[in-house]
Length: 308
Length: 308
Image (cartoon, rainbow over the protein chains, first blue to last red):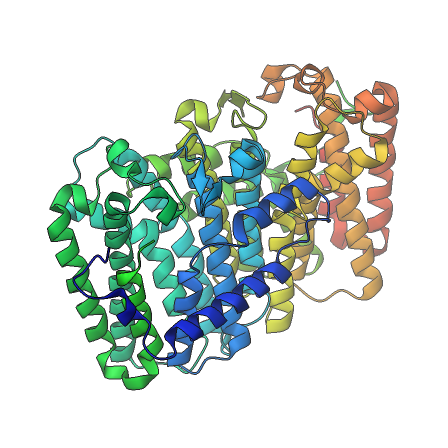
């Protein structure tokens, strides 16, 4: 199924599928090289870190970082570090989110979750160490030549991960189980839980390159927010409509856990209409950039038209 | 009791007790200001973060950062950020270490542990967010004027936290429960588990100031390693000799959990002799610095002569 009334094949505009595959391979390779080898002690911990990160995932955040880097002609070595760092953070958040004290999930990316394959303590430490590894990547060289600008970008990254970002969103999510969230509360939760890191991927990717003016920055920031929101709306739709084997994770989990979602609050049709509207808003936000924003615009389509 | 045959009062050389109290208060204040307010949403998460960090602890790592900063005449605003960052990392590691899937401890600093007072999920997220907060503090301004030097210091910090540092040491610790560790294996574990962050506190504190030459760097590095090791040897002795109320955490836990310690491997007397030897080594390492290293030398005494 497609979440909006349009063939999914449209997402694969000439060149996009190939570009996406190339970036995904490059990121996989960079992650492979970056993570401590499985033979290095403590082996079990390093195996768990690699298990949690390698060989799976759509790599949406790295794709956004690269696409945003194209917008500002950012040096690829810098963008790669941003891409790796945000993906390591994303992977750590999934490992911790799947733990018994959180979502208690047993399947992820079509495989047993990290704590099922290893054990709870190892999974927790692997998540902890992945967060440190992300910091290590992001600080190991400048993202911008100007030290003050560089510090700003690093702060944006750390803020997106912590209690005013992703970790805060997870806490609100936890508190929301079985609660009646309003649409505004749901959006606030997602703006932190998934939105903050997606936003960081876009703004840091672009931040590695030529400076944008105030208006352009505002437009890119709007795009990042809309893309993050759209990602979540579609996630909620897929949780209802797709099968576990399509998703590679447990489908129907939200309803089972009585979690507030866009579908539970808006209904399925209105959620789909919202996804379509967000797609338009994403394209609108990019309109002023012309062809430089082509990849970002294609990723917005990919996010909204995906089936898993 | 005193772990070596010398009155504990010796640690309080003229001025040290006052200096220590002043730094502890300054760090408490800085942490208080730095942590998101408890009234900020998500409140429960912010309350848990503050509960885990504020109002307790010897602040050994911040003391080391300040003392090392004195050695190189480092600007206090920079040293303060190092002190806050290492203490946030230390606090997060305690919260995660106390969780049921790790050491399953219920008392810390004389109070219920974070997951007992809040809940497991909140404690895990609080630890996660404290790690991000530490990154935020450490990147938000330069530690050194030279960008390359600054990047080196940030990398040292991130490495000390991750799988080749503290988190790796926790993994080895876990794997060691019920195992027969050799002295070399035990030392390797502690070099990572507690040593790496103590070392980072010293080297980053000093790194904020005037550059040291190669020989001085080697000496400071030796001091940091010895101080970290001594801290752990004394911890193991106190776990056997002190009461829970003295320690503010569960005493006798190591033997109960059949954990390898310096006392279980060496015996109590040899462990005390080792602590005394490490104290001498710490002073020897500092000998070339003269009076500039006075505070570092006093902290070595404090670490080894402490009773909790």
